[in-house]
Amino acid sequence: MPSHLNFSQNSNAKEYRAKLLIHPEYQRLRVRIRQYRASVAVVLLTCYLSFLFVFVSFPQVLLQPVSAQNPTPWLIPAAIMLILFQFLVTGVYVKQMNTVFDDELERIRQDVEV
Amino acid sequence: MSNTALYFVLTALPLMILMIWSANRIRTAAEFYATGREYGGLRNGLAITGDYLSAASLLGITGLILFSGYSGLLYAVGFFSGWPIILILLADKLRTIGHFTLADVLKSRFSDPRIVLVATLGYFPVVVIYLSAQLVAMTWLLNYIFGVKYEIVLAGLTGVALVTALTGRMIFSSRAQMIKAGLVMILMLVLTMLAFDRVSSSLSELFSIDIWFASNPPVNGAVSEDSPLALFSLGIALILGPVGLPHVMSRFFSVADERRARMSVFYATGMIGIFYILIILLGFLTVHLLGQPEASVTAAGSNLVLVRLAELIGGEFLAAVLVAILVVVLFSVMTSLILTGSSAFSHDWYARTVIGGSKRWNERHLHRLASSVTVVFAASLALLWQTENVANLVGLAFAFSASVNVPLLLGALYCDRLTSAGALSGGLAGLSATLIAVITGPLIWGNLSGSGESFFSWRHPALFSLSVAVLVMWFVSRWYHPSRREGDSDK
Image (cartoon, rainbow over all chains, first blue to last red; front, side):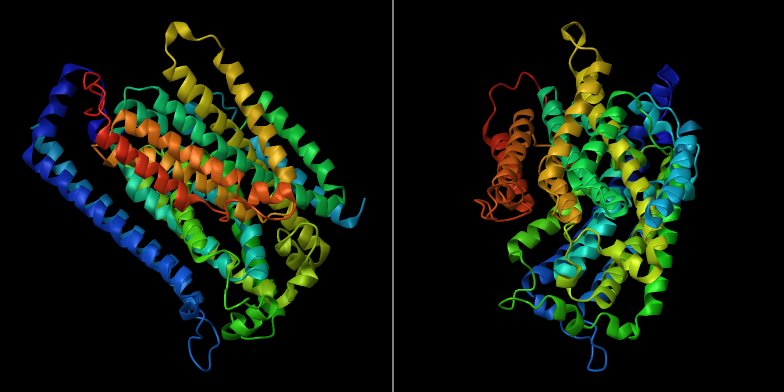
């Protein structure tokens, strides 16, 4: 249960929750969070699915050596980069959620309480 | 007692005692979910890593890279990529609406309790197959150490698993998971460094395609024994599958607040990423050091490649330590699978969905029955699949969760038009399609008939069965509206 919706069943809490839910800024924030989450999910899925597509359809592309001196096939750096990139995107997502969105939520909550 | 067995016992025994000593006695799923609440982000992240790091993928993927080359890389990338997707599509969303299990989500969204039953039935093959992969791996490892026949080791392990199912509801605590994660990572680093020391070539030659494919040259230009569509199907199962693992999902909810939950997933993602990159490295090191797969073929199929690498670079001592740590890891995954898998049945479905007066069974008895049935099924499959690569088996378990639980969960969370009837029929269709495809497929039909021939040629049916599930869900939701008075689709 998220902290901003987590309270006992007394009437104060219900009233507070109702106020929060109809607060225009809260509604706007929820839309923004949803859009942000959707776009991050699209980025991650696109990366993985395009890797998968090339992997199954054009193996000869991924098996090409990186350069004449370096016989490593592109597959290896591609796989490792994909893992690192996804880790990076997760980091950006967590940072955005934990700082920007959480701070705004906190501000709106205080606004409602006053 | 041989030296290997002695080293094994000397490592495994203190480890097991340490694990059991730090374990909490846990009686209910709710208690299980709560074990990690006092932990902060980093520590819980390490515990999640401990849950997710599977010895099956460590043993399986290294074997696949040596034996069948190409597709091993897909496993490494796919097992990892499912992870951030869970965080973004599910974990955050589930926390926001305050429901912690698939059953909770489905119950709050649909009035028809049969949907929860379908989801619970969907868990069953996932848990059974995942458990059989652990059993196959553990049996081969113990067979390597003690030299006892596969069937006899398996029978012994099944006995231990049944005892766990019937009596102890003990599960390894978060602390034990952290120790486990730390040990596995350190061990992998040591193995990688020692193996690097042995390889004469430079880093750029390590991945050289000539050496890689010298051991398994592509036949007719095909780099994998699976057809492109079957490989694609595997890729889909790998990214969606982790959602259906009950013992992994539960960790997300064991942290007190969202902020720390996200941080713990972030740390876990980093560590799991390092884990899979190390697996790729180790896979290529085995290609260099063990060489021709024909020379490495043993009864264990491709499952013991890493152990043979350890034996080569560090003698029987290193091999025994590796096996001991892996057995402890596999054992802990086994116990948490048995607990969480059967509590999905007895607790999430039976105790909370079958209402009041009609309860004829004691929840605790039902729990024991469910876990024993799970163990017996898993053991029979482990007998059938003794030469299969364990990463393949995990991929198969993921195919089930990707075709049943994932469409139900995502549909309930994100698709407002999905009706009760649509969810029920779609879930059932996905489950039966996967079952039929797997039973008539290479892994069951092909193994039983002995010839390797099978009706359904893909080893991983997720693309087929997920499409069936989604199509049925869409079609029924769109066209079947018997009566609107139940009002179940608009909660």
